Length: 134
Image (cartoon, rainbow, N blue to C red; front, side, top):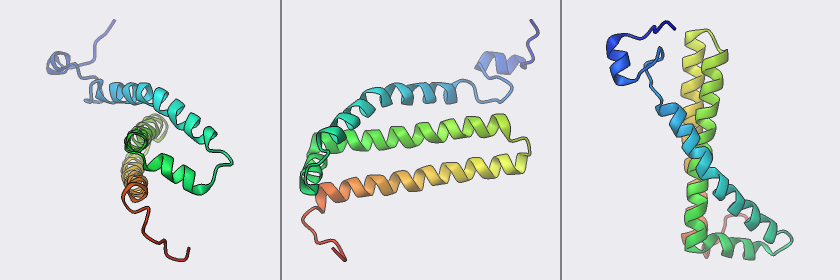
């Protein structure tokens, strides 16, 4: 089998993309983290179906659940961003478009993830504050 890597690439464990296996590992680790977090989230949502809005807020406002929700948000957005990046790298062949899409996906994941975390923190710390228009 022919090895197309440079000697330095072989030493560092880098392939043709010069990235190594960090992306692969990050995607697998977030997937593993998402298994119990998703189960926790689904059970929590299902147990609150039909419950008053205040009960769901109280559940999300508990420190343990708030921490798990923030972990779920971070893992889900990071995993989604990594997956979209892999699809873009595999199927988009124009370099300018590939770079634009990857940067856009990364920024979208950061902005939306931060918005979700801020919403969770609002539930934990700002629950008693009145909501505008409501």
